[in-house]
Image 1 (tube, one colour):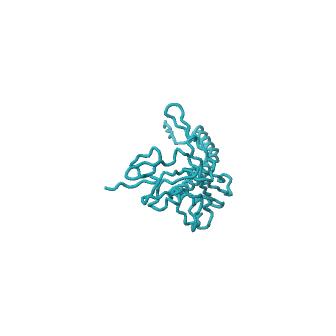
Image 2: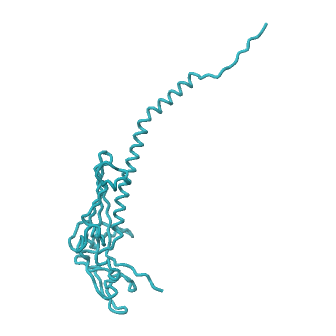
Image 3: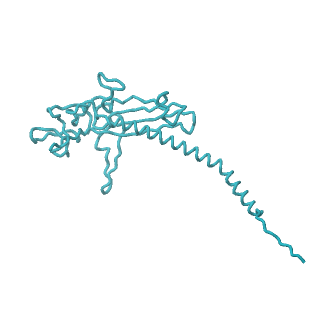
Length: 242
């Protein structure tokens, strides 16, 4: 009597098939959410690019001289202002000749009110000076009231966000520099509570503002980004000669 032999063949169990279908279903259900998340990540990247562009414009402005009367290397002194805190005004002292410096400034400091040829200078009014125009700025406040448009055919090609108006407006003004803007709390804490009110008269602080506005056709990309900075009337340093 001959015995029959049975051979086992690989096959897919019903439970394995069901498990595979469940996994595929979860993936398909998650796909729209993943696509939406990826899109939002792209919007965040574009928003960050806008912030970087605004910060770049601010850095460009900060690289310029504090005032028109600082543009000459021999005139880069502390300037006299008409409406600054009296505590910041210069006082005279004698060290190798009569000199004028701010209270608290070391006597050997080169941050003086007089240039190398003994002259004093006043801070100038905000805005372009005589004989200057847009594109010929030489100090910080020359940028007041000017703007940069990134929507032109030649400038937009290197900018991710296209199809809308991208404008960066720049503002510079004097602001109150009174010592009352500083409040000393308990211990060693120093809390700065500035008053950003514009003042037409000259002070020791210039406030810089950059505002990027986008009117893209995509709602998620429409934005207004505003950055603030300030620059102070402290003169400049002089390299020590050996």
